View 1 (cartoon, rainbow, N blue to C red):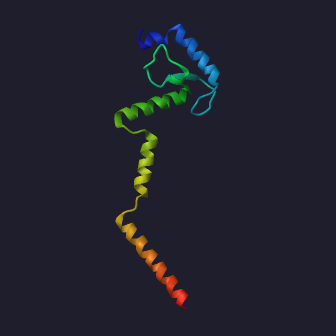
View 2: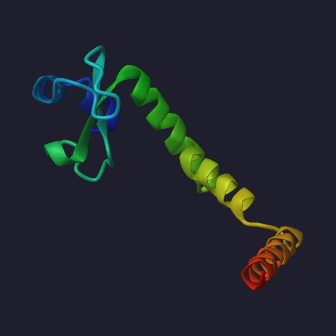
View 3: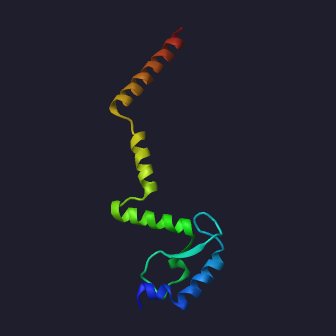
Length: 117
């Protein structure tokens, strides 16, 4: 049985209905509207357990697929991309480091002068 036939089968629809009822809300945003079951992977298709499924609302389900497709193409999730850009902007340049070191030295010198007085 292929994926499309299985997803349209009575057996899958009953499993999905049960899991949606058990979860009660989206596992991402906690919404209770338009819940769907998403396979984490398709290794156990037809014999999946609750651990193989994530219950998501429709909007989170779409976002999940967008992130998955983006990761397949680029190898990085959008959140990871944001973090990487933040980290690279946080790393100081050589000039910034020089200014920091010089300012620390100056502060130290000023403290020493104050102590002498």
